[in-house]
Image 1 (cartoon, helix red, strand yellow):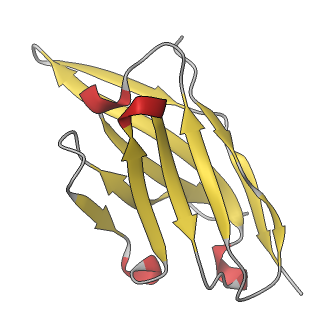
Image 2 (tube, rainbow, N blue to C red):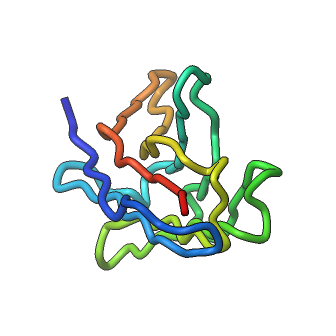
Image 3 (tube, helix red, strand yellow):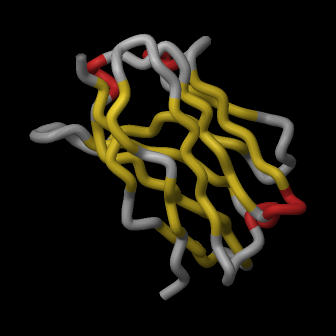
Length: 120
């Protein structure tokens, strides 16, 4: 099982910022669409942001548009989620996912998550 490793979570006050990182020693992110998901207690996992294989096309959940930025640095084989103006409702475990289709087969990898807590 290929491992994706998230880091950068923590406790931050409302209005603060965090930058999450997702790395892998086993896959190359430039060959995948890479996404950040989050799951709050008692809620379903939701898609937060995606950077497509091209690296220059991104998508965001409406609730984070203008506050979060997803990016990929190929030289570091790392995907980032810059989170600004954090709100208590952003509190969740954040997961990284790398997904591609190869000859009709789904190649899908997840990390174990990093906790983000926004609280005063």
